[in-house]
Length: 132
Ligand SMILES: [Zn+2]
Picture 1 (cartoon, helix red, strand yellow):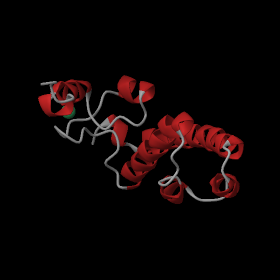
Picture 2 (cartoon, rainbow, N blue to C red):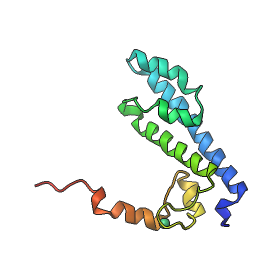
Picture 3 (cartoon, protein in one colour):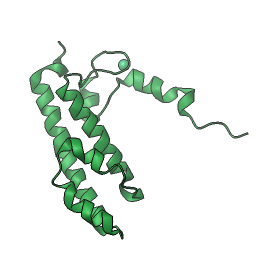
Picture 4 (tube, protein in one colour):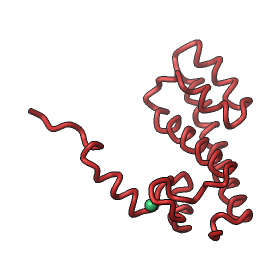
């Protein structure tokens, strides 16, 4: 069992992720309230009430450029919290090795170790198609 898989470290990252999520909740609710759409105003009221798992779902249909990054991050945090619950958090999804703790501190939602992330980003399929 690696250090990151110990209960104490899981609790630490769970706290970090939940704290980040409440900041995002406030930002998203605020942006929805400002948005000039009636349905978003209604959503804004729900953003604070739903649990973590439902928050990502709630925001699936929101299409606001100014919070698209935040909404994406909510999805990442939701997935990271699920990996904590499943005890797979902190393990690279590609090579199965423990992810460096420093990397997790910097990117608590990291799914891959640094080496695999680099490989992943270097994959030709991930690049936009060449212009003809
Ligand atoms: Zn890896």
